[in-house]
Amino acid sequence: MKKALITGVTGQDGAYLAQFLLAKGYEVHGIKRRSSLFNTARIDHIYEDPHNPSPHFILHYGDLTDSSSLIHIVQKVQPDEIYNLGAQSHVQVSFEQPEYTADADALGPLRLLEAIRILGLEKKTKFYQASTSELYGLVQEIPQKETTPFYPRSPYAVAKLYAYWICINYREAYGIYACNGVLFNHESPLRGETFVTRKITRGLARVKVGLQQQVFLGNLSAKRDWGHARDYIEMQWLMLQQEKPQDYVIATGEQFSVREFVTRCAKLLDMGLTWQGSGIDEKAVDSKGNIVVAVDPRYFRPTEVETLLGDPSKAKRELGWTPRTSFDELVREMVDADFKAAQRDALVREHGFDAYNVRET
Ligand code: NDP
Ligand code: GDR
Image 1 (cartoon, rainbow, N blue to C red):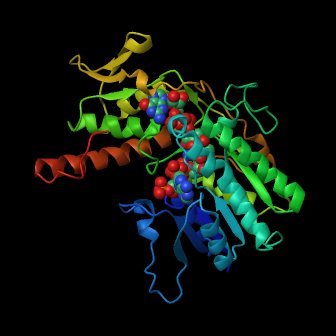
Image 2 (cartoon, rainbow, N blue to C red):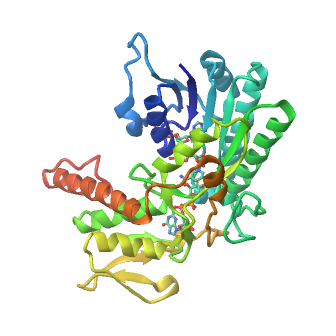
């Protein structure tokens, strides 16, 4: 039985990947952080009681900023594959916490690669690094592919640039099977609530059921290449099943603006929104004249990534990978999930049980 170790197992991709690897017959180990509240909601459905005599899914406390915890876990697990998905993954937050972001996102992967080396696992343990389209930042070529030059535009992206190169350096210097997946934005109903797609699907669903009145957004003109997380984690696994380690761009090859994402969601929710104004006065208004979506400059970034569009042809050519979920299907799945959640929250509020659990974004 193969053993996989996933950092960031409590996050969006970690949850999908853990379930995928369990279905493939892996023994899956995940690293979770200590938190004052339960932080395992995304993996509760695959949780196994630690009293189980032969568990397939095992969680360990650890942190990417804490070398000793990582070395202990890698030593104990002796994984065949490590998927480094853990990160302070919010671009805007990285401007507020640049040093912590560098510690977790740049030095975290270095600590894991060093753990492999210190424990003499260079020939046993394969390593996947969650690299990102944010590396392209101020784009130098359209669409972006494996050979496109990088121009990172945030502390997050600069930290991920270090991670990208340290992964390649350890591959070349020590013969570790280490790969970068340069993944473009991928979303799902499990997406964190403060990333723009989920903020929109959740926010509009809550407006629809009367739980809130407005959604405030930043740059409506930003364009992204949005895919489904479920499709992208399969590629993370495929990258570690090849003869030689290589880096791949994973994307859909299609892009849409934030404004278009709002329009599609509003249509699915039958909200009849129309756009008015421009710049920071742009808004989406319903048929009664209520402002449902407005711009709040607090969500503008000091340096923005205006447009990203990936070219996944290398992944298609060499690994036979193509995304399965269309943009429309992705939007529908997210809207449906958030509408259901909003209806549940509205019911909870109606019955007076909302003191703690039902909050506005
Ligand atoms: P999430 O933000 O949903 O998950 C991040 C995970 O990392 C969480 O489990 C979080 O734990 C954990 N984490 C954060 N800081 C630490 C730390 N110091 N030590 C250990 N664990 C930590 O991200 P996604 O699942 O969306 O993304 C997975 C990876 O892929 C990230 O590295 C991200 O940067 C990268 N990426 C994501 C893309 C996307 O569009 N989703 C695109 C390209 C790259 P907790 O739950 O406790 O917060
Ligand atoms: P991104 O995702 O920065 O691409 O990073 P995010 O959804 O945060 O932003 C996408 C674009 O939307 C614009 N935007 C807003 N963003 C947020 N979060 N909130 C808003 O209110 C808002 N309004 C407009 C942003 O300015 C941006 O242009 C994600 C993360 O998952 C990274 O970890 C990952 O590496 C990249 O995708 C690829």
